[in-house]
Image 1 (cartoon, rainbow over the protein chains, first blue to last red):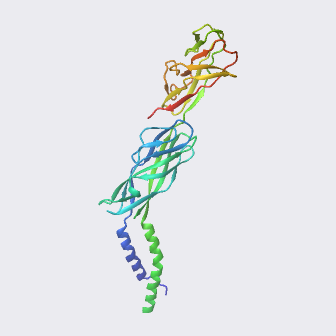
Image 2: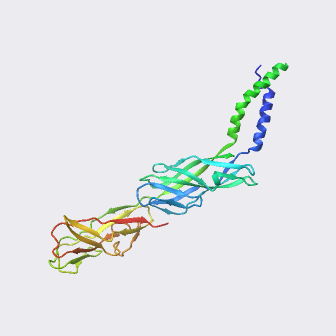
Image 3: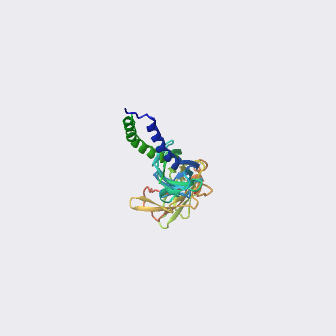
Length: 153
Length: 177
């Protein structure tokens, strides 16, 4: 009597699901370059916040000197041609030889974090962020992953 | 037969409705991974090796004397005070990130006190090292054998007897890039 697995139910599911898959192909993110704050030299043991802009410039109110060349995150977003896509980020941490450092306050080259994909369904996404260096941060290389969430608007 | 299949279709709709909502939600949200990295250097730290010590000096009673200390620690003077013992050049060291160049700066003078009485110590130009560099490279020439403090001590005419001491501030910062 409750014939949920009957062919009509499956037909309805198929018909309803088909349009969804037609107007929303997966949005993917391809890395061209990762976010790299490069070398940070602390003049003192006090911690501080380092800002990396989407033009790869580092700055800090605290006593840091920057060495080597920082790179902004450069990613290509792929999706439906001419679709409006929105991005958001989750705060994360970088781990290494010392206490984990927070990475947060992400900025992008997208106005309001939205981009209209081009005719090829692509848009370049530049990502800057703030890095929170702890007091007495142990020297070394720290890495981490940040989850970017992409949506069709 | 007709009733039966009609009911099935209705139930199918109820069943699919919440399912499709969740399907739409998951299909339209995508996640990607962004990699972030940073290389933190060692913070700078300055440690004193030996303190600057002018030893025992008996002042001239009528004129101010400048006691000079060379990078070797050798004492001399411009007046007629009596220098009764050898001096000791001050040394310090800086640790930080290997291979990085550090700029060193220092206070232009320091006041030595003994109670209410004072004297002024003026570091020699190029107080750092025998060659007078104002910078050093970490783990190369930032050690106590490289970084020295010496200079001039102004001893007043009839300077009051006592043990005089004071502190002297040295600042080190990484050079850019």
